[in-house]
Length: 234
Length: 196
Image (cartoon, rainbow over all chains, first blue to last red; front, side, top):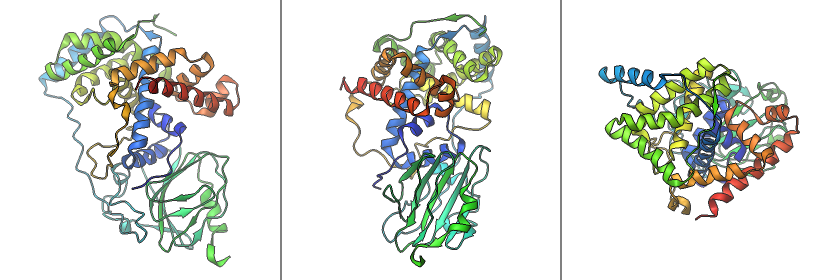
């Protein structure tokens, strides 16, 4: 995978500090699974978090705090209650072939875990039609601040010029699209501030599937059906 | 702010930072109580201050600092000194506990055993610098930041502040927050590159 577009440093720093919305965090963790470059950057930001912790004015713990903690831990030890952090087995969700080679073998764990249990490939997703050539699937169990959805865009469909109300990030899963910023392929992230306007076009003969996370309530949703038109039909 | 404030000296050099990492390893391998007591003395008051910034309540902060230290005991075997310094790892433990308690959810992370994980074919040259040394360098660089940049970095990590909220709080334009952060990050990274 040859990733060319990454989340901004700002976004990666917010991921490390733990101040992203759950929607954004999901998208970043999915990208990071595929991107050692961003994993490295995030470790760097976590090191900064550690440095802020070291440099902070500390607050004294109450008397006998340590004794209390030791007593609790002792009680646990006798109960053999040690955390093993064994994660349940990974679910494999196939992404499918791409004629241009822009795809991933299966969905990274952070995303796979949030899909309905009976889904074993992207084709199983109960897509809902949003507009001609555009289908969406809204992911559940996400904090109320922000939304996260999968979008499936037919070849040649353009999503008309739109700005962003708040922060929006898109992760390409399959296929590709092109906009004013460049060409986006599987694994790439478009990390857009509210001041960016763009007009993405699914630019090859195959459909484009992407994950979109937003912090603001989705304005996009309302705009889409009205404005969407097939790119080649204009 | 309730509770007594005291500025304890942090690990000033890589030897000190390495000591903290060794303590965690001792806790993992031999359930070493003396090592845990040392970690507790150093980190619990800092984690308490961290939690206080988010919770605003000394009692909750105390309880969460205790809980974080209990997790340090329970999860010590997951600590890998080749991947993170002690302060970095404990920061992530505190961060995750904070998100769990204040936002009632898990911090979403990369699973290292995920079969879709793409590994680095070209590990960075700075791997030769130990994690402890790296943490000490970042800490030193942080101390040398001009006050206006430092406060922006601190607010980013120690409060649930978006950049626009930081701008509001400090009464400066959003662009200024962003440029100060960019400058600070440049310096913090520059500090690291100087060693390799």
